[in-house]
Length: 397
Image (tube, rainbow, N blue to C red):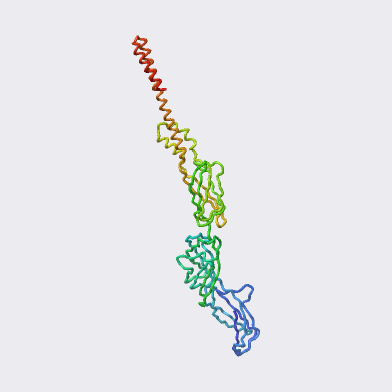
């Protein structure tokens, strides 16, 4: 503070000591004296002859703005003391900043909510704040509103969240984009204070894939792998992990390179369904029951979907992985083989049954002939029975 000390009395004064007696929100500054001495003051001074002294005081950081009293005591060489009360106006500092943004990256062509946390870091309230931002490239734009929001009042050390719905142009390249942010507010004297800052927002990140069964031929199963997301995938690797119901002969992984959005490729693996190779071994036990044979072929051709693992590098340089499940159609070759095997076993069983019936007939006929010969029966009848038995036996063969 700069103080003007004037002697308007009728006597000259010597050794005048000027002392500040601070109370909250004022206090003494470390290393600074609260007193200053003036060696001499003439009587009946006018303002132009007044002496000047400077005192340094500290103002509490949490002091609200306003007008405060400060006592200044003057003492001369005669011991005369005069106390003067001064009105000191305390003003806060007007300053705000964006201390946080809710996201560091957004995806293409997707509505994303972007929150700005605005904090008044000064000691004086801010009024009629205006917050706006712009991407100079035009890649990131607000939707459902313009790029300007308003805050009527923001107290010291208080924060408020300002939200935008934004979207990034799908035709832009992935990368880090700069947002130029402007904060305007009225200061203590209703003047407009402008604060400018910048922030970075990455556009583009992960993608998604779709996998479909293509065909099976020559012992290999082909899968169609498509990039159905909005970002390019780099160093794509397709793998068939170990899983119940399937086995892979040879390599279980295939590196297919980069896949742009909307692009696809074919990955082939020697995949076999567990159980189909053993179908003919147990189908003979199901002779004569076509429903059980059909059930056996269905069981042997597994009901599990094939799990496919896709690993890729996204546009942020991160290695990501996605699991997909693909329905593989039933193995028709194994089913046909089971049906043929069942038919052959059914025919063999019928033939064996006929042999048994004929053998019983021959044995019975032989017994009758033997019994009647032994008891003196008609030789002509015996001859006819023997002829009949011989013919039946021949027909059976």
